[in-house]
Image (cartoon, rainbow, N blue to C red; front, top):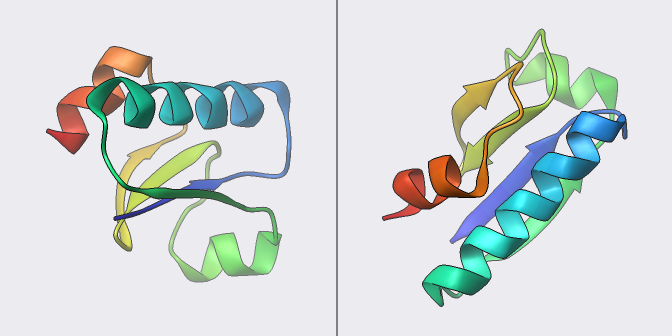
Length: 76
C-alpha cells in the first residue's frame, strides 16, 4: 500500500504525515508513507487545497487535517 501526504510542509501537512504513520503502525499494515511537496505535482493530481491524503494513487482527503482514527477508517 502506498500512502502519500500532499502538501508544502506546513504544520497541518506535518501533522497529517504523523497521523498517517500512527494509523499504519496501529493497524499493523505494510505501507509506504511518503510526502509529495512539489506544488506542480500536487496541482497535476487535481489537489487545490492542502494537506491532502492519497491512498494507492486515489485522493481520499483534501484540505483537512484527518485524525488518526479517520485515516484508520480509510485504511480498513
